[in-house]
Length: 297
Image 1 (spheres, one colour):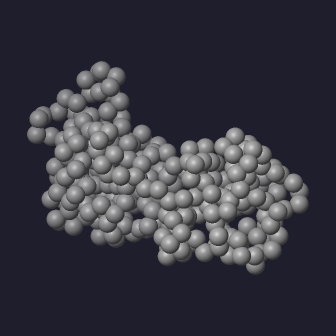
Image 2 (spheres, rainbow, N blue to C red; image 1 turned 120 degrees about the vertical axis):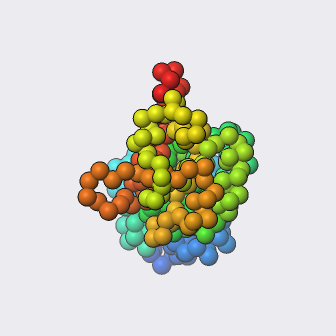
Image 3 (cartoon, one colour; image 1 turned 90 degrees about the vertical axis):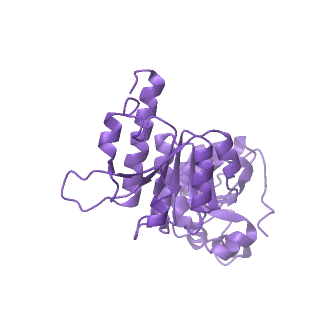
């Protein structure tokens, strides 16, 4: 039902929408992908909003099965239609009512994309320099925000361990703001396995936790020049980050080479997961850039 998507060399922007009936079978089929069971059954998921759809078309056009825009959105985001045309994809226009039924969060721009997740084998084969490992992270907004932060920091991959939120949950996808299509994201791997594989590939494993006996600022100050027994942020690193509510269990922290705390200089009790992940990833990225530049730090 969803596989009859047209591919062509042009993307129409007629004022008259192609789809006008909010109760049409196609509209209901798209809407159903908001549910996990249907996503798993169909092997497809929704990408909502102009930023995510733009990145899907530019970086994963071979997986895009359908594009839907309102006529107004087709005019406003002409670059999406242009990129789609270059990739041989047709944009189907729908009335605002149709797009609202398909997704209340589409902002007039929606894509249906085939699911495809990365392999841990491929990630470790690339000898990654920086990886974010999310252990049982359940909040979709946090998971998506960490993927976006990892992308911005130049990380090589993200791992969502077993027990974490569904990567293709619509809120996760929206929260990545398109970064989902920029770097590999591995799902379903037990934490112990992910840690062992990344360590074998040459990464040190640092757990980010408020109870850590290592201070992130101190490690950044001596990155590349510190004592041999101190974690080196300039080295290849996998950051392990825990659940929003309970953090990392004792046995999870024990898997790491060191447990690192993000210092709190003001009166805030703590940082949320996405913010802490961003700080840690950028600290490693900065230290690694310094080493690559050859200044020894």
